[in-house]
Image 1 (cartoon, one colour):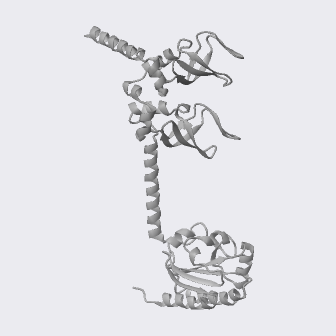
Image 2 (cartoon, one colour):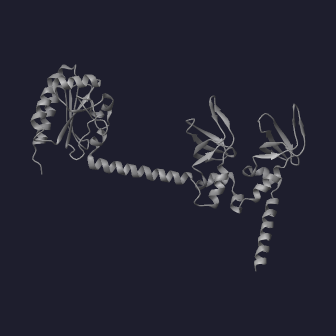
Image 3 (tube, rainbow, N blue to C red):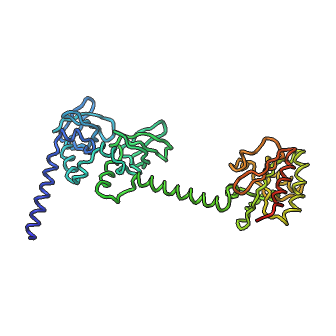
Length: 360
C-alpha cells in the first residue's frame, strides 16, 4: 500500500507538471496575471544603438502576438523579442506549476468582481512619478479604496494622494492568491471596513451613553474650562454636575458688561450656597490676560473658556454679536433663557425662578 501511495503521488506530480506545460504562448498572452515580472534573453539581440546580451535579465512589459515587449532593468531600452528569444514562457510555466487550481483560475477580472479578495493594502512593485516631487516607490504600501478593471484605486498616506495604479504594478494578485486558498489570510478590505464600522459604532454608542449620563453641555466643556483669575484648568466636578449651565458673555471694555456683571456676581454669592445646582461659565471675547485682570478687578472666579472655544456647538448657535449676553440652559443643551444687553437681567430673573421652583 505504501508503494502504491508513492506511485499515486508521483502520478499526480506528473499530472501537475503536464497541466503547467499545457500553458501555451497564446494563453499566456491573454492572461496578464500569469506574466512573470522578468525573464532572461537567450541570444544576442542587436538593436539600433543598443545590444541585449544573451543571459541578460529584462523586465516583461506586454505581449503582442508572437512577441513579448521587454525593457532593460534600468528602464532605458524598450524592445520586442520573438517567442523563442527569451525564456519567458518557461518562467511562466514554472510559476504556473506552483499554483493551485483555484489560483490558476484567478484572473484580474475575477478579483474585480469578488470584493472579498480585495486586500486592505497593496505593495507597489513598480515605481513611477505621480507629480513633480511626488514619487511612488517600489515597496510603498498604499491603502486600497477600489478595484476596477485594469487598475487599483489607492491612497498613499505618505504622499497624501489618491490615484489609480495598474494591477500588475502591485502585489494585488499575490495577495488574492493567498486569500482564495486561506479564508483566514488578510488583512482584507471588507474585513477592515467592517472592523472600522464596528469600532465607529462602539465609539458612537459610548459617546451617546456619556452624553446621556453627563449631558451634552458638560461633555463639550470637557478639557476647555479654566479659572478666570489664574488661567489654570478647572474642570467641572463629575460627582456633582450642575443642573443648569449659565453662560455669561462679556468684555472688560464694554460699559454694559461692567454694569451687569456685578449683579451676577452678587446673585451668585447669595444663591450658590443654597442652590449649588447651577454653574456660571464666563464666555470671554478677549485674550486671557485681559480676562484675568477683569476677573480680579470685579472679584469673580467663574470658570471660563478661551475665545477660540466659544464656538462650541452647544452654545455657538445662540451667541449674538451684542454683549453682555446671559444664556441659561440645561446640561442637555436646552435653552431656558437668553437675554442680550437690556434683556440680560430678565434672563437672570428667569434663572432665579427656575432655582426657586419646588423640586419633586
